Length: 524
Image 1 (tube, rainbow, N blue to C red):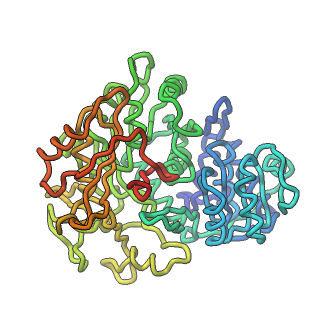
Image 2 (cartoon, rainbow, N blue to C red; image 1 turned 60 degrees about the horizontal axis):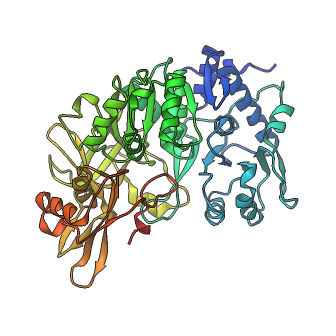
Image 3 (tube, rainbow, N blue to C red; image 1 turned 30 degrees about the vertical axis):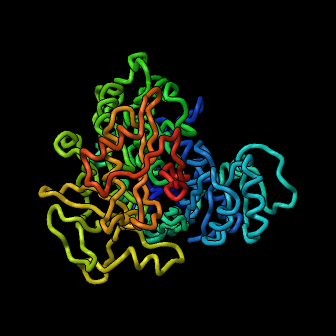
């Protein structure tokens, strides 16, 4: 006799998708997802995900197989994530902006057996599929003309509709099984698949939800791609809490974002420093009622003080959490809002249920205000890089307990006397000029404090005498008047002479990676 899904769902959750099954059981009619004019309840979302899991199992997907999703933000991307997990598969979310060559490279690396993709991207994934023939199923979202030589292709919605009413299959996974493979390009551009178990992702979601004090009545606006962990965890945490996720295709016009916040009565707004810098350019923010926003989160880099002040004007009732992390452990630190003024420039303290410290090149722990590599210990630390044992061993090293491994982040940081972390630079970003080490982030922080500066990127450019010379790329605010001489004078007032940029280039935009980070390798 078949057992009902809710009987099979343990409490507390053991697998990541238990979050969805439990929330759908607890509050089935509550709105889970808003995409444009479409609204989906938790019961409907769970039903669609279960249907997809049966479709995948029927197409030969087995426990531990990889299923790649190549979708823009939308309901189908959410359904695909949960449905893959319910099929005991490993989800491999891929940015829909990725090009054919890199997509084919990822396919070759992780060997997916199924692909769920947006049909409009057929010209991108089609050539990759022809080079990679072991795909058992291709489920396409939307309608477009599909090349006839692509095998195993069917419509996503048609497959789900055909599966309606069938009995759910019992799950077989453990929390130590992999849930997701999230690719990060790293500083050198080599794609590495970060292996995250169900336990990793449950632990991260629980920790971040706890310090943000997320609630079931929250409305979370996600402008970030679900293909990257910052966006993905907005969806996971909203399901964990039973909150409503307002999912947008991306960050569009600032005024449209403000309208969406007002219309949906958004309470939680996660963003990147770049996004908040653009919102700070809005004229007359009183046109929109954003009094519902109670929590702002920012990750990627510490927010400059001027942007913090703009956020307080735009969202007067909100508290701001400045955060820092890596895909390899989701989140390293957060700065409690009450410490924003007391600890300017800090990225905060260790998130709950993790530990951190700083070590020298020999692995010895360092004391307060000594610069070294940041080390993270906890259940959020990844299992390693997919098929890259050497890269894994460079990052995961023996920890305090026998048999455990901790994450060496590759980031230079220091801790103050109260345990607050200050990010200095990526270890591989530091360069020498005149025999002295330069951390780009230190130069960037000085320039970011200048009125009229929106963004900054600092690199070392080869120099036959100096080894490397310091060069800064500066993006001005709209309407701001900046000049190289004034910017250099300000640097001279705040930096040692060898850190002052020899060249300062004013540019309209900085090149970016698919995850929105500045692509320093494209600067010269």
